[in-house]
Amino acid sequence: MTRIIKKYANRRLYDTGSSAYITLGDLKKLIVSGIPIEVQDAKTRKDISRDVLLQLVAEQESMGRPILNEAILTALIRFYDHPMQKLASSYMETALSQLQDQRAQLSEQMQSILESPADLFSQLARQNMDWMNQLQKAFMSSGNPPGQDESSPPEESP
Image 1: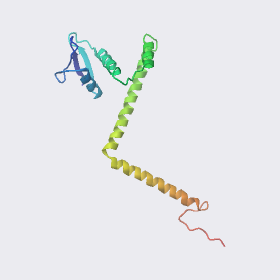
Image 2: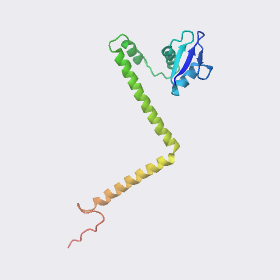
Image 3: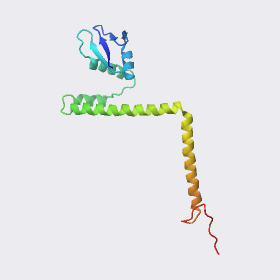
Image 4: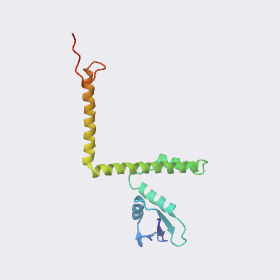
């Protein structure tokens, strides 16, 4: 269910879900946690989500390690009013969605490793034992003539 956030003229944000005023940082936490949001102008009820999200991105970009470097921003600006604008937008949305999916998969894998390191070590030990057995078989069979398996005794020569 989409969480409605109202933005007042004094720039304050009101979370109707928790019945409390929130900051942009709180809004970011909602978004990061996967809660869908819609920001509405408190007076007109117009959806201003995009404007607030752009404000949040701009704030994040200025705080340290930006994602959008000058080359990316320049390329984005060049796509405005270009015939491929819609295609570029669709492409970026798909690419970011796939990146998010990969991040979630990696997170799940890391979580399972952290939850059960014994299972990980057990699996690694099993893989090492299999590898050692294969190596041993290869080593043992290298001394046998072709066509003779290692379980039968070598033939005696006259």
